[in-house]
Image (tube, rainbow, N blue to C red; front, side, top):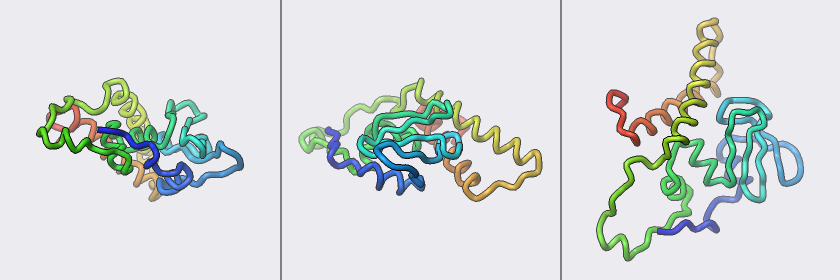
Length: 162
């Protein structure tokens, strides 16, 4: 099994496909942070695909694979496969299924994602409690958060969340 880095999407195309409008010039561009919903708080490197939220939500990574893992709540291999950059070794595939780790997402990363997602849900709940109507982008973000929380719960086998 191998990661084929050359098959990872180009950063500018990838981030555009994720609905992020990149502003500015040079290697580092500014965009909204999809992790906490902040506008103009995330910086993205068009050469490496690295990203970092400048507002302090903790979102950061070194390439589009790291972004895809965090944004979708996927393991390394799942994200690499989704991006078309993973190649299974034909010889190992003939040997039959291999034992799978119980959770594709390390506990620290899962808790970090859940913490950030809980903040998004809390802010949305507070806004709804004050009578504000959610924008379509906010509603979509909540759906993404709910799906990610469900994937994490499924990965760690949390009963009652299915």
